[in-house]
Image (tube, rainbow, N blue to C red; front, side, top):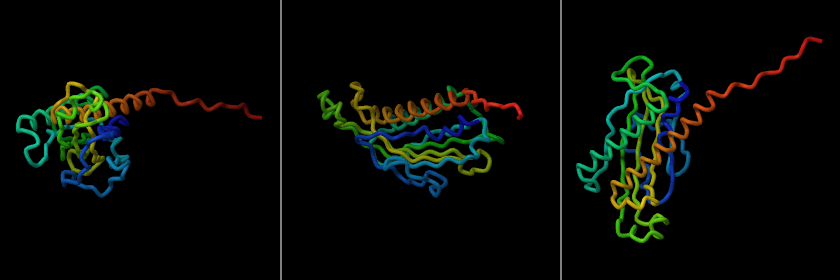
Length: 209
């Protein structure tokens, strides 16, 4: 299924105050990653087309220090998990309950966070310029659910949404970064569906001379 090939595009870059992309050791391999820009690297195997369903692992939060409270870590992981599952189901990809042939496993982790500075967001002009906006870095991969062979991978960092005037916390900006990844992924999947439903142009035939 070609839509499944685009699962790895859950993550697209932006700008502003995002942390640097990481190589935390979460991915099973970083060897095939290719740089898209300074904020993003990815790998996609053509073999991903052979899979029809996905098993989504719980999102991990591998962020050191106390930049997020335990409750905020739980909220961030749940928010990322919900975004991933929503994109999968809206794309018409089956969610599996257990490993099986033709089932891919999705693994996601938040690996770094840029802290929000709430007082820099008070003035709308500064907010629209990105002042005080935090962000997040993530690593994710799609692997064969039985063998663990990597089928796709991404490493990315992104800022939150500086135009969200209700976002005053670091957690809000982490959610804003996740929203960007989800929006971009949904758009990529929408384009894929449109291309898949577009009939191929007919080749004109000519009578023999």
